[in-house]
Amino acid sequence: MADRLAREGFAVLAHDAFGWGSRGFRLDEPPWRLESTLAAYRSHWSLTGQHPGPDEVYDIAAAEHEATVAKYAGVMGTSFAGAVAHDDLTALEVLAAMPGVDRGRLGVVGFSGGGGRAVHLAALAPEISAGVVICMMSTFAAMFPAYLDAHSWLLATPGIGRDKEWPEYAVARGLHHQLVLYAEDDELFPRKGMHDADALLRRRFNGARGTYRGVMLPGPHRFDRAMQDLAAAFLAGTLAR
Image 1 (spheres, rainbow, N blue to C red):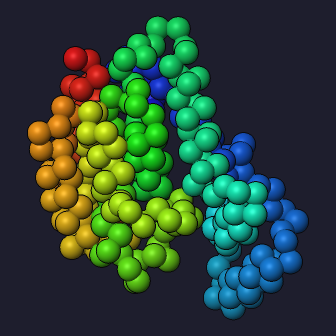
Image 2 (image 1 turned 60 degrees about the vertical axis):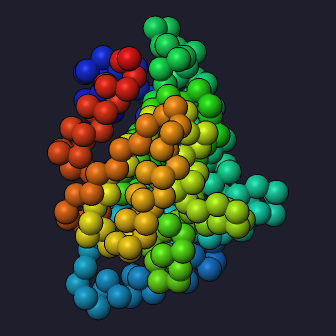
């Protein structure tokens, strides 16, 4: 998606946020609790004849390690999502300062966990003019309790659901243009929660200077070519104004 947007004339920054890529954790010598979990995985793989590659093993280890990271983030007075948001805000400043970038036409796009980051960034950065969230929208109410384990600590910041529903963070100030793409058969979100979120966003953007478009598509959790077409067209249409 980043390459495609760049080919279409956008300046694009796809950075490694806290916990990913160059900002990830070295887990070749895992903490003792994680090591015991990985030992159980290795035993299962041996019994079932599976041979996962190093990337797959790292993904499993990182997912298990996330709770430890979230725990120590709390000890230090922040949160996992807070540390990621700090990196995303910093990256936005870097992008905005690049030659040829118009600070009045900044957008953000994210899929799944990246969609959650896109919601947070639009809520925290008033300079965002357009946002695209793919397969990361539901009400909190519909997700309790069965769907919580499907998501990382990025969606489990203490207190986030106390005063607002998740779609309300996507509204931000109601001054930007927002596209949300939903997958009707998304295994990570209840269908009712997605439809409730769509209805809430339509109500909250009604009369605001910003705009909202929600698109319900059949199929599972994904960001395929057709969805990329919708996202790219939306960004071109809103940021080129």
